[in-house]
Image 1 (cartoon, rainbow, N blue to C red):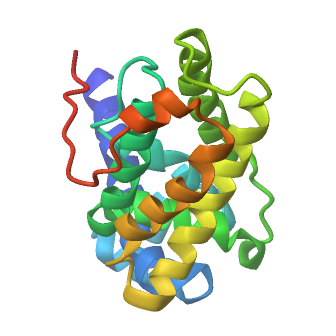
Image 2 (image 1 turned 180 degrees about the vertical axis):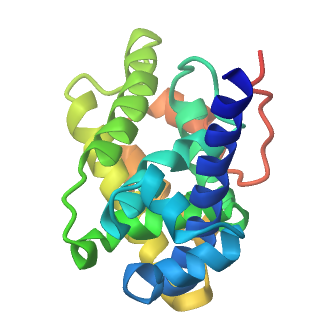
Length: 209
């Protein structure tokens, strides 16, 4: 029984990874179940056993994206960690097909008749947690609103990556994220804290601890 369950879990993961590749290449409209079946080297029956429809598979890819982000920090660390996190996500969009597909589907989900806001809410909550730590450390301006800024940052990041994809295939995304921060930081960070922050896409802060 355990072996059968493990095989079912692995089959589901293979389908999600194959679907991510196809959706990343062609979007929801161009990503057919037939192509996903071929990419996963499985059957349509297996796909429909795990996912009731193509729309359901797309939703699962959207929600699966965070599972493929192995470098996320384990606990909030404040403004510098929030900045580093956005640069990390920018790099992941350049190289991580599952994350990239999930983000693409989240942006284009209207094509699939989906309305899945929860993934955006998850990122808002993650960013807000960093801002809560920043508040406790005295890094934020007195009138800065953590909830509002977290939502604005998610929206700004989302828009920046869409524009970067169109302009350069996301090659310039780290530079766009740096520009986003230069515009946003004066409205959120205390001057002293802002002067100490580093906008460096190549930082490797060591989040494993």
